[in-house]
Length: 182
Image 1 (cartoon, rainbow, N blue to C red):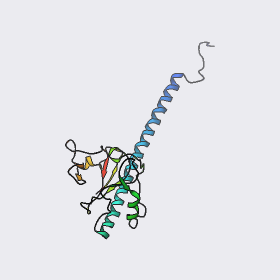
Image 2 (image 1 turned 60 degrees about the horizontal axis):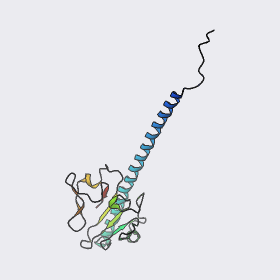
Image 3 (image 1 turned 30 degrees about the vertical axis):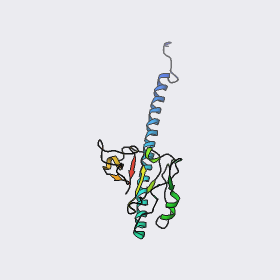
C-alpha cells in the first residue's frame, strides 16, 4: 500500500481558468461575427431600398417628366431637430401610386446623415427638375458601394461636390459611409 498516491477528485484552479478563457474567447468571436453580419445585412437592405425608391422615382418621372419637387430641401426618413427637412410623408404620398410603402432606414436615427446618422434622404433641385439626389449612410466603411470607392462625382447644385473622386484627392462631405443612388 502506497500512502503517497492520492486520487485527484476534481479540476485544478488552472484547468478551470483555461477552460473559462477558451469559452470566453469563442463567445466573443461569435458575438463579433454576429454584429458584422447584422451591419452587412442592414447595408444590403439600405442599398436595395434605395434601388426600389429610385425605380419608383423613375416611374414618377416617366408619368410627369420631372422628379418630385422638394423645394431644394431634403426629404428625410426621420426628423433632425434644428434642420430644415421636408416631410418624408409627403414623398410617401407622391410616390404612393408607384410604391405603396416607402421604406425607412433600418436604424432610422434622428442624427444628421452627413455626420453618420442613419436615414434615407431625397432632394430635387428646382434649378434642374430632371435630376435628384437619393442617399443613405452605410455602416460598413469598407463597403465597395460607398462614394469613396465608386470614384464618382455628384454635385447637388453649386460648385462643391458632396461625393467625389477617389482618395487621396477626393473630397467627401460627411464621412466615409455616404452611399448615393442616382
